[in-house]
Image 1 (spheres, protein in one colour):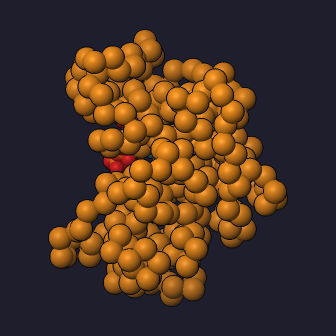
Image 2: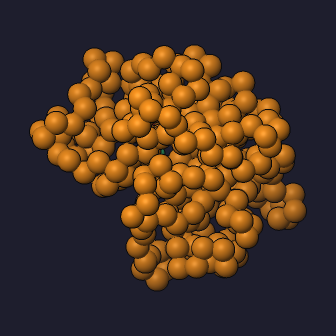
Image 3: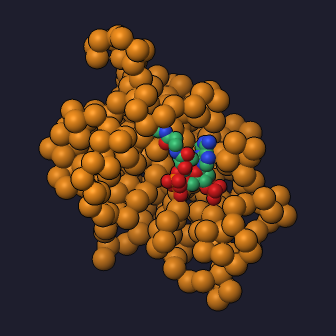
Length: 256
Ligand SMILES: CC(C)(COP(=O)(O)OP(=O)(O)OC[C@H]1O[C@@H](n2cnc3c(N)ncnc32)[C@H](O)[C@@H]1OP(=O)(O)O)[C@@H](O)C(=O)NCCC(=O)NCCS
């Protein structure tokens, strides 16, 4: 299995930083403790859900350090969205065996989102509840059997990049995901009755299948950085050592 750092390689937009961990150890075996401000996390003490939330927050603090922000508590806000320090946007995701965070400067990104799901084949008909046939076919061309799950992850990552800055709820079927062959995607919303070419691009991102997980990272851009800027992926285990700098893909200029 590749390093957990590599799991996010090529998915982080310029100027942002990310961190992942693949911990599965139970909380009572020595997991991280909640900071006092994080007392409102979901799940009872010592539950796997809460343990994953705490690990994701540890990833976030490591990623924050990479963009020069002092590590702080990351409480859960009233809508469920994480509360970031001033000047920062970001997102958390966690599942059994993988936790991750992405953060970036608010001067560049209006919002960032990340989502992971363990690869599994969706039951027939399930994908149709969150995506149109054209979205599913487009994703399958790029990501094969993982296409439907990638559409789901792309929509969840887009929601996390969109909701905290707008407060506007979007259901899965309000938005359309279109993949391009390199794994980048646009998420568009279309007013009822409008033709597809009148859809507005809300969020851009990229998705990949890595070590049994579908991973999607989305960004809502407020300022486009030039393509020489680097996205940074960082792993807590190497916090004291050199980080691995990874060239982020160009941010779609239309994703604003
Ligand atoms: C909120 C939601 C996206 C979380 O995704 P998930 O796959 O269930 O869980 P993940 O582990 O990936 O992410 C959990 C994290 O999402 C974040 N989150 C929760 N609500 C959020 C919100 N309103 N906005 C941004 N992030 C949110 C939290 O950080 C949470 O972690 P925490 O509980 O430890 O603080 C999902 O439950 C949801 O409500 N989706 C419906 C809306 C949607 O996706 N629409 C798609 C069209 S764009």
